Length: 340
Image (cartoon, rainbow, N blue to C red):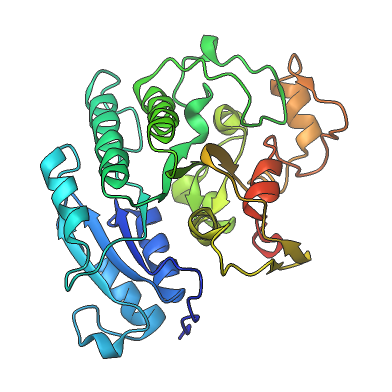
């Protein structure tokens, strides 16, 4: 059973939209481990899987007395496309006069769906409602799930998958051609706009890759794929709890009582990051590919020989095609080596 930590960050009460999803489950669990009180929010009813996960991992009943819990969890079912519902939910907090210190926004459709309107319209309206409600209520710390697909990758037409350089970073173009990636580009533009309107608001958009329990999970029969099939997402991945940790850092870096260093497996003590103001996007991806048997140099030569390699970067062994240096500098986030 994992014990919770004493929470000295000033981020105590957190709303998590999309808590019923796989990423949502891990973020809720991570926040509870930090001693937070968490309100899970989703358009679907609370599944048995989340309370059971909390019971097994943390050892308390979700609906038991608060004294049983290192952090308190509650759940509310609402449609994020409904402005009044979102505003009312955030305004109510966790009851008893509490207010939210932060919001993690994960509630979205995770694929293009019919490639017409549903994914785009759902995601764009939901993200604006969540971000705007937080701003209106003075909830100044927000971390939202963006996507690596702000660059034309797996969901885009082959002819539009035009990459300028390796490794990809946050400055790479966003010439997306499909509704999911477009919705993520727009949610980042919404964050830019709202941070200009509300100078105290700070938003992190975390561009996640495929979030999985382990590298072994990606090679199971259910998910087995040829190297060619996985070329369109550049063989990327992220261990799910490392993604959850990035959301926590995005909320807490720069709080007055944040510690100055963090211990990362295999890397020792690292500075926690510089923090930032306004809105910033961060790639949150493992530094290796998910195909340990394949050499990255061979993959590039075979599938992306026309893409230039940035000066100073060596394409070799299992080294990935993404540059997460900004997350290291600003958030103090480095994917734990033991999970690669």
